[in-house]
Structures are given as C-alpha cells and as structure tokens.
Image 1 (spheres, rainbow, N blue to C red):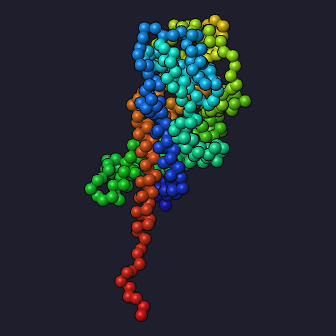
Image 2 (spheres, rainbow, N blue to C red):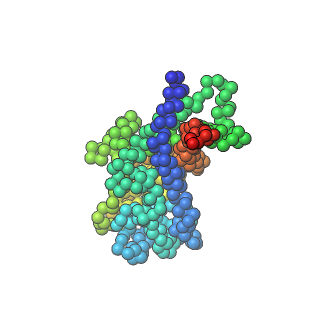
Amino acid sequence: MTTRKFFKKVHLWLSLPVGLIITIICITGAILSFETEILEAYYPERYFVEEVKDKKIPIDQLIPIVNTQLKDNTVSGIKVSSDPKRTYIASLSNGFRISAFVDPYTGELKGTYSFRDSFFFTMMSLHRWLMDGSRTWGKYTVGITTILFVFILISGLVWWAPTDKKKLKSRFTIKTKSGWKRFFHDLHVSLGIYVCVFLLISALTGLMWSFEWYRNGVCKLFGAEIPADKGGHGGGERESKKPKEINYQSWQMALDNLAKQVPQNEYITISDGSATVLDKSAPHLRATDKYTLDNNSGEIIKASLFSEQKSVSKIMSWAYALHVGAFGGIIIRILTCLACIIGGTLPLTGYYIFYLKSIKKKPRKNRSTPLVS
C-alpha cells in the first residue's frame, strides 16, 4: 500500500464516525466568533446611547442610580468604553455572566443580558460539550473528536498533495461542468485545502479547553507557571461569589488615574480593588493590562502589563485569540469564521462522496432474468 493510499484510508475511516460532530463544532464556532457583533446589530439600544452629551455622570454617582433600577442585584464591576457613543456595561453580583447596559449621560438602564439564558449559551454548550449538562462525556467527546479532526486534516493534506507538479493547479479548481460527482469531489478537496491551516489552528487551540494535560503541556512549553490549586484552567465559567459591600467612591478616581496611565485605551473595566485595561495597540481583544487598586483612594498599587506577563491566563488569552481569529483585525476573524463554516460542510460533502462511491456502485440485480415458472 502506497503512502497516499494509507492516508486516504486514515482520512476516510476517521471521518465517518465523527463527521457530524465536526459539523456541529465548526458551525457553532462560526456563530460564536461574532457573538458581540450579532448582539450589537440586534440590540443597538443596549450598546449605543441615544444622544452624546457634554458630560457623563461620575461613576460613584452613576452606580447607585443603576442599583436602584435593578431588581435584587447590584453592580460588581463596570466596563467604560473610550467611545462616547457606547453605553457602559456593568457586571452584576448575582448570577452567571449577567450584564446591565447603562447610558452614562442619563443613568438610564437600557437593558440586561443573561448569557446562560441566551441563544449563544446554547451554541457554546453545543460547541464545548454537546449540550451535556454534566460536562463530562460531552466535553471528552468534543475533545477526542478535535484530536481526530487534526489527524483528518493532516491525512487529507497528504492525500491531496499531487505527485506531479502539472496537476497542482487542478487540485485548487472546482469543475462545474463534469457532473455532480466531480463537482462535490472538487468542492470537498479544494475548499478543504483553502481552509486547512485555519482549521488546524482552531483545532489545536480548541484542545486547550478540552484536556488539562494538553493545556498544562502547552503552558509549560511557553514557560508559564501552573497554579497547583487551579491546574491552569482558563474557562472562567464559575458562578458569581456571594456579593459583598463595595466601595464605589474610589472608582471614579481609579478611572481617572487609569485614563491618564493609558490615554489610548479601548476600554477600562473596574471592579473592587482591581481593573483591566485594553490598549488600542494591543495584539488582540483579550490582551489586557491588569491593575491592583487601593479601595479607598483609587490609586494604582500594582501594574501587570500584558507584554510582561508570563502566566497561564496570558497563554489562554492567546489561545482564544488564535482560536477565533481575533489576533489580526477583522479580516482574519472573517476568514476564520468562513473557514469554520466551510469546515462544517466538509463532512457533509465527504459523506455524499462516500455514498456515491460505495452505495451507488453496488451491482444491481439483473432485472431481465426470467421468472421461474
């Protein structure tokens, strides 16, 4: 058996049992990659103010106004965008990833968003653990499928590679006038090659959330120290802690200090005793600088710049950025999203090709055989 035939069989027999799971993972991943943009387009009143005024309400005055509008909840953190057209996004003390949107000029509550009750939580549940509430068998199924997907992509690439340079151009061409069988074959092969690198990056980084051994190995490879109590887990999906008394008085002072420290910021997020800042020159959307604050004065006690960090959280932030294509601007993210959509169709076209080759080619019974009298 030649090398190409061996990899052809590997590609085929690994794909058949996990193809539909790959489709689910890819399509849901494509949807999740543009979660913020979809929400902003569907609920513009939450994310953008009706009118930009001359002055915003100071944080220490704004938050009590917001708290009075909330039912059985309080603000535990607030995200302040440098864009004057955007609302503030407040994190709430009670519940899992519940946000409140506030007009900073009027103090009006523009709406709330509970991630657990949203369409995107369903998509994430499918993407991460196939809707398995226990997050055990579903999580491991997704993880094992992702490992197999890596081998499927590599074996497909080896199988695709032409031995004759003259045939290289035809490998990238989709013929539309040679029948459906040829069309779907070219569609599967050519599109698979176009998106192979994007899918490999997404698969290899996606494994960071599936297996602790893999995550720890990657973190150690890049020199990040793994905390013994956390095991390097970067999922960030814990329920909110019991709310405590928060000193909002220092938050405005902290906001002013951080704005002076990083004048070209995308946003500043402040919570009790800590803050994160995303610089406009940051390499990706999760490359935030971290600050420790004095709860009384709002002064900066300690700064941990993203460029100087050597931690699990930094590795995980890069893994996420590579996973969703959020490291090279909107063009890379669109290409990654398209790659995921195409990746979701590859198993379907592959199944159809297998059907045409294996089912339709079965010998038919001779209909002209005379009946026994």
